[in-house]
Length: 319
Image (cartoon, rainbow, N blue to C red):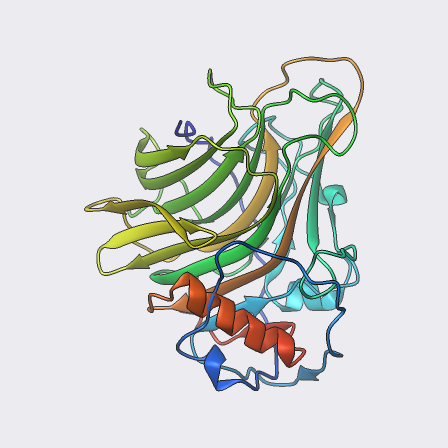
């Protein structure tokens, strides 16, 4: 089931610095990769070192989310921010930075993850939602990929919330004339009348009134998965662990540059009765401008960065 379009939201922007780390594998340039069926590694990986200038394959973003915490200066320098303030979707005005952290994780390929923890006690004042996004609108056609851990059950507390765990590039303004949005949305308990579990892929043309096409995969997906969105040659293709799920075309393709978001939020508050928390985790994110990169090639590229201890590369031009 396709998600009703969220209400308009204000976005605060910070200056984007383009520090980058050394990328030493040629395989990371034109043909990077994401594999089918995803498996974690317990290895911490090689030591990370930074370079004072952006290096690596052109038109590439890679981030392993190797940060000490939300106050780590390099998090903002690498072009990320945590959403705060008001607006939708979900429970309005409950966005908070307190749900974002970077813990070690034995299943993470680089040793740590971005964890998005949303919580509620069934009341709006007792609810916090979390979203992390890039601070630069510069992602358009090409390949978007991320390794994401989805949750079928709350980390603590009673099950049953209508939670949405998402990875998506989106226009900075809902009112944009060339509005663009490409969604991976996982609803373990459904919502809007559906019972779930379900993974929705949605390609948008307009936010208001909503104009989009979508595909629903009715499958329980708790655990790690590699999500890939390829937007090239007049079509958008969504893949999960190397399995093609859905293709949109015609007017349902990107029409302007977007930013990249990860979000964990509640559709509504179906019951009170004690606190509960829901975790979504992100191991890494990858983008290649203006190229259709296969899931296997994404996997190769990410392996190349990680084998050389490269935690961050950003050579995507800023318009």
